Image (cartoon, rainbow, N blue to C red; front, side):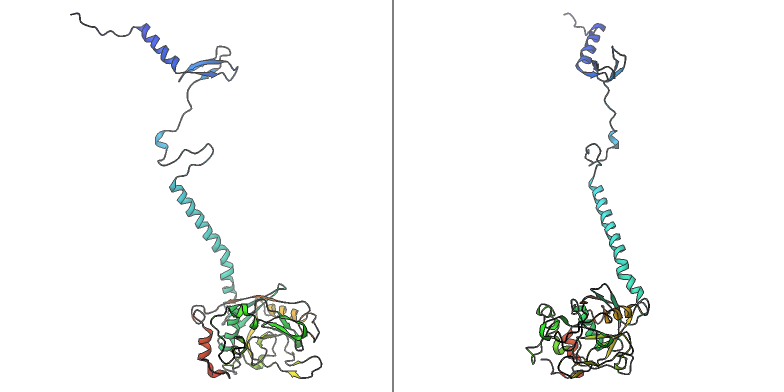
Length: 360
């Protein structure tokens, strides 16, 4: 038997094989200089036969595989690639930025008033008015806690918001529960505004007064805890002092603008009787300068009055209505008395002070 011999390819055969392989991987490339088309094998650079410009069929260099992070999706050209980890970091950064911005905005709102009133021993009420002015008052909660409780409670409930300055007679600026004057001397009262009173849940109507408002008798806190202290009736006629309008009502208040102010108010119109304003003091104007808040009050007192007794026989409001927009409270004992304060419970505990029937 003739042994079969394994013969290798001849050089001519190998050349033909290389040419066939090269031709199969050729690509038609265009010369950038003259535009001539020519077949260039893959991975080769040939000179253009027309102009001699090199024409390449070498692919662009791609990133090394080890430089590609697991889980990264190839993004479109010009966009960043986002992995899940990157998204978590972005969310955390956005949340942190939001916290910092909120802190920067709230810092002056929350902490600046605390610094401004650092030397005040009592709560501070800032009355914001529709004419752009404001009145800052120290409320004597330590000296006369029951009278101060009236005012602070009403302010917390928003009782004064939207009510008007209803009188500027005899250099006093008076405000309280009057929402609007009507014809014939009648008034819209906050204590009769059921939308407001129904929202007050910790004060109930007395069983002996079913037809009256919650506020008609409950706010009659006429007793002063210690008349010998600075916040007593002798200070009612001192400039800048806040007092009750009457010693039998706790919903109307007045700020005196002059030490020479006349306390009494004459009834206007055909009836010549007189009403006396003899309430007790429960606060005083304060501010960055001693006259800051008092200047605002004096400006209201100097406004032209609506001098028409048919509107109201007692009060002369400014012709240009001045409304209380809001009363902001600072330095309140929110973590003590006011955190769990309930009007009915507080009222029951002090019933001996007031000349009203006991609660059921």
